[in-house]
Length: 412
Image (cartoon, rainbow, N blue to C red; front, top):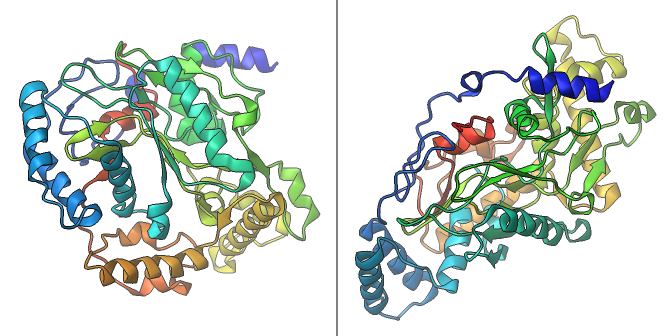
């Protein structure tokens, strides 16, 4: 029956236009202003000013007292000759870490200096990118003691575009459209799931938590599929600390939140494939992925199992169900020995980060709507503050074409 369902899903793929994302305002990469996935990108040169600004920043913070003039002259000459330049290993590691420090939507930036950088800039073909992505997951998982890690693949250059990973994260769960607007699995990934089926993926076991293959493209601009081996994907079965019925939901979630489709921009150079991860804050799973109405939408089911009155919002059944769902996430990760943090602890740590940065004369940009946790916001100290929303570079940037890829749009 499952095979029959998956065959019908492949035949009934929704037209690509139906998955087109809403217009985005994110800036485009200074090197490639590419359009829809599959189209040959328009390639320009690296802006010299951005390269110089980065070199000065690197010297000021990492090489104080050293005159950057010689390095700037070398970078200018390389850009004049080739349209781009190559970062040193130190510049790459520093740029990746500062991009994390500059991530306005990330509450966990206290640890920015702990980011380990895997320099894989020589890797550009799809098969090798997928193989290294698996190695990234294994190294980051670290037996459950999650390591902050980034793997940086080949950059875009005027001569050749770098590789791209279509999946929003290295580990994503499939969303199978089953008719009538229903989705089995994660609705957020329905478009990418349909593309994978079109490209020959046979589908998973047919559960709400089937791991999608990686979709990777290289210079030929054609997406290719690569299955993730099971030993590279650590998953945590979710159980409630008191209620035995919770096991009947058969919930689980993966341990490593490795963002895969954002561009790492350093000094005007765009690294379009640079998967990076920290570790989960429990509310990312329990208050968003599993609870959002456009994701797994589990609050009504949890409330029913709790015996709550769902006939009126005034009973606060959503709030009570949300708390128990998040308790289950934290309890289960702790029980499995997998790194996770809670929103109260992380809020305090974020303010420690702000104080530390300000003591060094550096401002901290932040997006209030992302920094305040999606649960019990007013009970956390980050709620009662305002933040400067200025965006600084280096940065991790999601371009409109990356959004289209994650939605499964392919112009091929």
